[in-house]
Length: 222
Ligand SMILES: *Cc1c(COP(=O)(O)O)cnc(C)c1O
Image 1 (tube, rainbow, N blue to C red):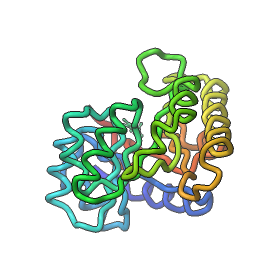
Image 2: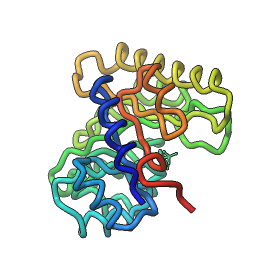
Image 3: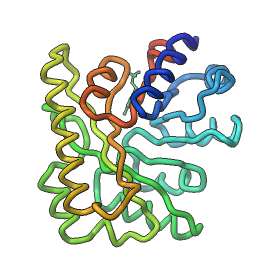
Image 4: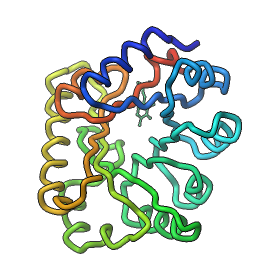
């Protein structure tokens, strides 16, 4: 079950570093989330649409729900009414669909651009070239009901800390370049979502503003 000591340590660490803690509660039962909520946590991350909808309906309404997984376009509409931040936007078509569904209910939806920083080919995300081409074309900036708040990435699954640190530095440099070239006037473009249970310390040391931590708070998943 939930490890509240780890939650408190992570909360303190994030306060010191001016970062946001997303408690990744995927696969965990409602009671576990309620316990972590009762201990003060308000931001939860989920990676399955219907699981998130179900939990949102059952839990207190002041929770901020972050969608952290791969989002299919045909499921976007289910989370738009309540989602606080969508981390994994990795295609123009997905951003267009989010914009359409947000517009339909007159809402602005905050998103992060997922960047491919790992060496593994299985991880989702834009390449530097892809995102540059889209932003040069203003393809994403013109989506009026979408607010692009920064970038998100996942490092390679490896014990090589130096490699992981390099990948986080790479994401930070991408963020700085996008900020300077396309979002200099937009204050809300400020988030670098990187770091999980095994690498949040390295992520925070390399510019992360938002860590997504699951197992350290909720225990390991099956
Ligand atoms: C599951 C998941 C996490 C949390 O992973 P832990 O190793 O349990 O901290 C973070 N980010 C994403 C995108 C995830 O899918």
